[in-house]
Image (cartoon, rainbow, N blue to C red; front, top):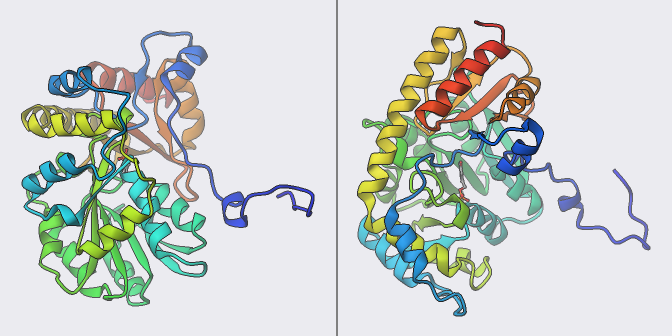
Length: 371
Ligand SMILES: *Cc1c(COP(=O)(O)O)cnc(C)c1O
């Protein structure tokens, strides 16, 4: 790393040292590289069915010249009615990503400890690091499930914040009720427990609703994060939300974002999406069905597929994933090779349309020499 003299303008040390967020390759780049127009975009866990027609209608009647509601009042009211939670405990963000950053900005000081899992959603590590915290990562078990025993051990050391995604991005499983309750038993009241449920709408029945489980824990400080990016299909508009255990946490999050953080298009679209939950439920059902079809197909090819409660699959290729992803890109298929140390044999593929999934399976089988 370059050292900075007093004549060189450099960012804070924590920022200079950050790893880069591993964002998926855009369709435009994929077209250029592959020379193909029919790109299968399977890297960013987007909804292959788009979003509800109610969203397009709401976007058509926007007034772009007016500032958005800084409090996202109507959206918070709609969420409050859906969730049965006071709007004062709900905060909307420019994507739930922004709320991860806001929590770090609000609660972390240099030297604090944050607990998360590896492999993890990149921002559960990057945002705490940007705030100067030390990040402890508890690896998944060899079977690629949550290591509840190890997490319980680390929780007793009272990290300032713990970020857990359930279902897990990038791995796919969700915490069982028993596992979640064991974690909560170990959380100290001075630790903020953040449950990132970005894929909540895609879980099979039989798993707990994290918000309901946490609502019974009046002595704990917690935040549940959810998003419109995945099942609702609004990734490009950037809108997510957090539900907190008390108004104080919501206030701290609000104070840590920019005043007009959620733009008017995003607010209008999210409200429209909530008014047409039937669309989301149908899309989620198709994605779950195709997730199981693709998993079976890949297992038949001999690929190790981690069971998933999300709109993606995590595949152990038993070889470095980056060259395989590069070869798929040449065919117009964009997927995400995992870059985290210890997991570079894994590829994450989003569930797309049935046709895109089949195209991926065929090309992966050829690329790995399995067919
Ligand atoms: C996709 C994702 C998010 C980010 O969602 P946005 O609302 O689009 O910012 C947050 N957490 C996890 C675990 C995700 O996979």
